[in-house]
Amino acid sequence: MTAYYNEIDPFAAQWLRNLIAAGHIAPGVVDERSIEDVTPDDLREFTQCHFFAGIGVWSLALRRAGWPDDKPVWTGSCPCQPFSSAGKGDGFADERHLWPAFFHLISECKPGIIFGEQVASKDGLGWLDLVQADLEAKDYSTAAVDLCAAGFGAPHIRQRLFWVGNANNQRIQRQRKYQSIIHQEGRESERRHAVPTDVAAHVWDGWQAVTGADKNSRMLPPDFGERTDDAAGRVGKLRAYGNAIVAPVAEEFIRAYMLITEE
Image (cartoon, rainbow, N blue to C red; front, top):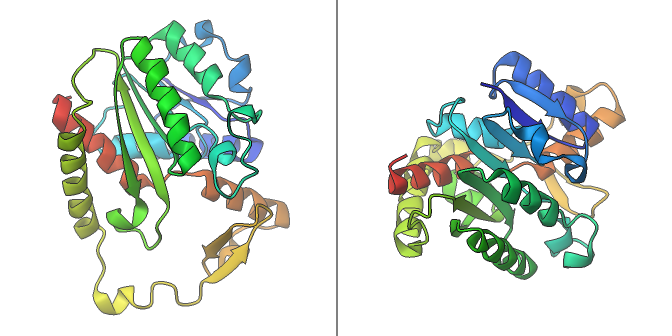
C-alpha cells in the first residue's frame, strides 16, 4: 500500500522523499500542491494520508507505536501560526487557516481515523472547538489532550493539543480515561528516553539560543551550521524542525488511542 504526503514547502517535500527512499517512513508519494488544490478523487488509492506532512514525523510516530504501514489512517497538523501567541493573532481570518480545506477532504473521503495536532494556546483551544464540532457533525467521536514534550523525555516544553477523530463513533471521548492512559504512557516514554543525571545536567552544553525570522528563540546544536552547505539549507532545516511535531509525544498519543480502542 502507498502513503500520500501533502507538503507545500519544497525543502520539506524533498526531505520527505529522502526519508521515504531511506525507508524511515511509510513508502509513498509526495504532493507539493496546496491542500486547497487537492480533490477527494486524488486520494482514493491511498491507505494513509498525511497533510501538512512536514518531515514525516506522524508516519514515524505511527510506526513506532506499532501502527502498520498498510493500516488506514489520516493525519494533519494544520498550520499553527494563525493561532500561536507568537504570530499576528489573525486566527480564523488568516489565510493559513486551512482546516476548512482539510475538513472538506475528510467529509468527502470519510477516513476511519484521523490524528492531528495544534498549538495549545487560547486561540488554539478555540480552533479545537471548531474541529471537534465539525467532526462530530459528521458522526465522528473525538478526543483531545494538552501535552508537553517535556513530559515525554524531551528537554523542552513545546505544549501542544493532540486530537483524534474516529468515524466508527467509538466512545473515545471518555476524556478522563484517555488522559489517564496517555499520561501513564508519557511516564513510560520518559523512562525509555531517560538519561543519567550527570548526562542530563549537560544536555545543553555547547548549544546556542538562536532567534529566527519569526522572533522565536530556538536551541541549536553546536555543529548545526556544519550540517548544511549553505544558508538556504540552514533556514530550510530551521523551518522544518520548527514546524515538526515531537515524535515521542505523538507516538504515545497513538499508543493510548490503540489501548483504549483495542486497535
